[in-house]
Image (cartoon, rainbow over all chains, first blue to last red):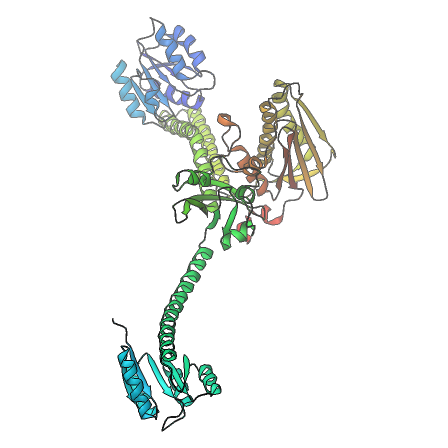
Length: 117
Length: 500
């Protein structure tokens, strides 16, 4: 069964981009446009990996992340931060990778493959 | 060098000369006798004896001619004339011609002694006088040089006593701040009624060290200058600091440029996140276009193209925003109905006023009036000013006061006038004058110091002006005047600097 990636980003253009890109490379995807909405999607979809934007209108990425790691069932889900903020690697230190927009998609794919196969 | 005590004697009366020689030699003088005026003159020109004693009648010339000749050519040589008994007139003539003294025949040794002593003294004075004259000339020259330096230095220089009264100022200072010796520094520079906080002059009086500050000062013509100020102590002979010199360099232009660059930097900083998002979406659009073409998926191709078009539009409007701050772009002006425009602004302000229980009153006349503005920028300037009015009410700590902001719009012949009137905390003159300075904020951590700076730029770009009336604790009134019809050069996007 294909691995599933949850894409959390408030820009629908970027969500579509990542959905298409991961889909073309054999992954299933689901998405959320805000941190507040993302938790519900996690519970429903049980993704294998999450790409997380930091700056979003309602609830920022780090807050969502704190909620995520409180849940025993989800705390091991690897998170890749994809953000427009520079210095974003300090925002969520336990993230498996922090990538600054605009990013090199092949490098992103390499990281994803490395983490979840 | 030992004192030259040569005395040159010149007289036709040989015996008298010999007698005098003996007498003077006994008294320690080195005496030389010549018989004619010519020989005496050539001896004087070579040996420069300090004192000459001459008779009134020489074999080859009159004593007075000899005297004139000596004084004209060798003014440092003192001449004593021997006159005939009772011929006071000859004595006076000799004095007039520059003789140091005269002695009358028969020669009294005491009178001779006095005359000689006075001649030597006079000669001393003469040399001293010449030396002083020379010194004085060089002092005058230096003084003139220093005065010139003081005046021509392209800085404001002033001296102040410990009460901050000006005791001296240079030319540039007088030109821009007036010639008011004896006035208070803080009055002249800042129009304040008491010394400024953190005054560098005061600090220098205290510790004797130079101090530096940066200030915004207002000239006598009402212009504001950013100045970088240094102070230095002036001490009297005992080392006590009597005055402090203040040197201020006008750095307004640098600050203006810096202000522009900083605004641009802030703008780019706040845009950077957005730009990164847009570029990522643009990447996505291109990826989906490429894969769509490969898969021959018409819908995906179409969607991707839409994304690319949108993103390019967003990038171009961002670039145009940046250009706005670098003033490369003229105004995006259009004719606007004053009342519609004002209603929109009031609608943005009212909720904020309501939230804080501040009464918001708006009064508009002339429902059909039109004016030419760039509505987007003017609206942001007016909203900024009105939000400040609300903040001014919130900052006032008086009790039992009901606050009110009045937004009034009216017009005169050429201008549309917006008034934002509040009965809040008010401003002193210093705050009022610093209001449009970049990063000046009276709001502590809440203010960025950016808002009114940009608002003022927007109004100026429209050829308009902002007037402010304010009294501490009474409230403030901002009056924004905008021309109803934009001047042609503004419409054509030519800035004022380029015209002049």
